[in-house]
Structure formats: structure tokens, C-alpha cells
Image: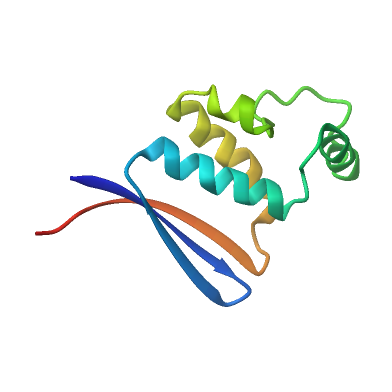
Length: 104
């Protein structure tokens, strides 16, 4: 049986969680990244885009709200994950999402 694991490293502290679905793992990881980036409201989101000089451009992968994320198929969530990963990459935090199997 396949399961999905999120491995997190927050300033040297390792935290793991397991998920029965790929989408469940992706959603939780994306929620955590939004929290880390302080994107909780539309206003936070707009300020984030302005700070990174992205406010004048269209960013179809810059999905941030839980409701909008939950409506997306898994394939698109991986693309959204890749978009947001650029903003926390090379900091003292990291998230890995991996598929593995339950062993007997």
C-alpha cells in the first residue's frame, strides 16, 4: 500500500507525518508553507507579491487559499508546490514529500 510522507526540517528540528493520499500530503505541506510565508489573507498575499516584485504579473500557480487549493487536482498541486518552493528554498526550513510503501 502506498502512503505519502512529509519530512520537514524547521531550523534543525525534524518532523514527519504520513498520509494515505498524495493530495492530502500536498495540501498539508502547502498549508504549512503558506503559514511559514505569512500568507493568511488576501492582503498578506498582495503584500507578499509586492515585496517580491510580482504584483504586476499574472501568476496562475500562485494559489494560496485553502479553498482554492482543495479544488485543484494533484497534478496541478505539484506545479503550485514548485512555484512556492522558490520562496523558501535555501533557508533554514525545508519540506520533502515522498511516496513510500507500508511494509509487512
